[in-house]
Image (cartoon, rainbow, N blue to C red; front, side, top):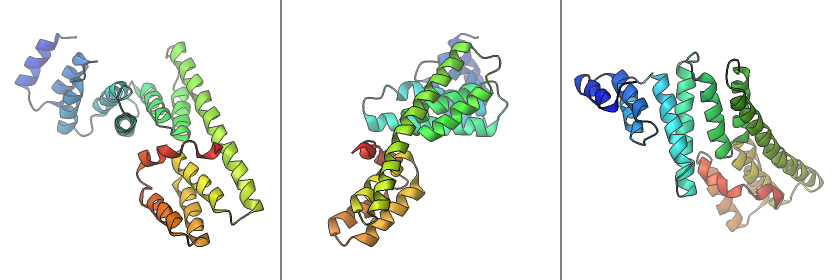
Length: 231
């Protein structure tokens, strides 16, 4: 690999080369300034799968250390978007297993457990030739994600039973709806919220449910309801 100063020269001589910025970004890693080079590489070549992949890696690395939960969530969500593009643009590039693994890990860290399991499964299908320690880590993370998801599934099953016994209990619909919102199951959440609006005329409840319906696309909003099923 060229020294960084040589990459600087290449960029100066080829300011419109996506490859020049990309290789300088790799030379800078793990310094945060590498992200700016990947930004330029993608600006010049929006279909640059590897640039998305490495930028996603950097966002995950630095995002995990953000000082506030909101900033951490935002950074990891942005990393997921980069891994989405990397996987979508070139399914044959060498870092494919790592892209699925890292996307799954980012999703796991923002509580998208079902999606994380799908990514871990995809990574495990590509495991040939990869280090056994990495495969073991992916398998362990998958088991952890499945265990957490099962906790919520059991809670929802208990609420389902309570609703069958008493189909007009607003509190049960609210807890189930908010839990589904947390899990990213928005269709199920909307059905519960609409049922609440049919059952109540209490303005405070109506206002809260209407706010929920307005925030369906705001994934960070639902993090506050991670505790609901066990309540």
